[in-house]
Image 1 (cartoon, one colour):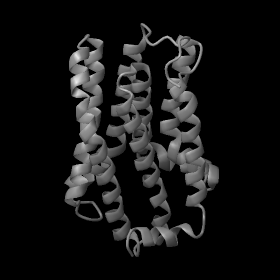
Image 2 (cartoon, rainbow, N blue to C red; image 1 turned 120 degrees about the vertical axis):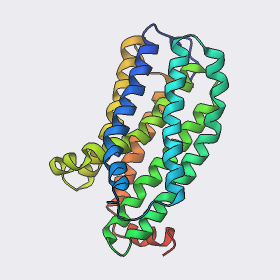
Image 3 (cartoon, rainbow, N blue to C red; image 1 turned 180 degrees about the vertical axis):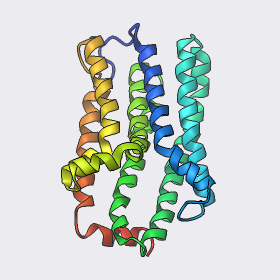
Image 4 (cartoon, helix red, strand yellow; image 1 turned 135 degrees about the vertical axis):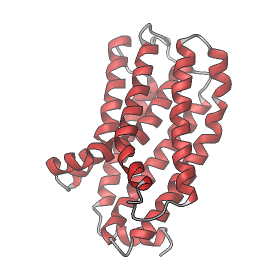
Length: 247
């Protein structure tokens, strides 16, 4: 799927493009999560953060630091160091997945009786965790295929960074798009999908075709977004979600 002789594995602009991608990720994370972090530091959070939430935040930041370091190492030609540091991702991926899911279960249990409507939201972090884990794991297994590897890393990171962008501008998008099926997609996935669209456009401009990873993974991502919105709006989902969180 990923090794195709007609696809140029490298392009002169690649290093700059992926550094730009890293910058976009940091921008979204800062704008999306800085207010929440500031609120917690000022004692304005609804509940005290459990240890697992601190671990999740540390792992998430660690992923972005690793991503930044890896892009910088490639740019300066330190490929061997880049490859050696890649094993850090083997540890980070499961830690990020488990702590994210446990943190969300903790949050859902807190809000379940205070705001029953919040149970509908539970399907969204489930998607984030599942999509990130699948894509990041595939990236780790494709380390010997650099073009596939870095595109899978990009998609995996775009998915979770999309959550930060939703925190930043999701409320404004929801006010415009509404709370229906398509409105929820616009509110939740615009950030991630713009990043993905930029990646597709970049391949189209520099290679005149899309890499096989994008051809396979991007339609699956879009299909999953549709499925998530469908489940979110399904009346029986909050009942099942309540059982899943152990209530």
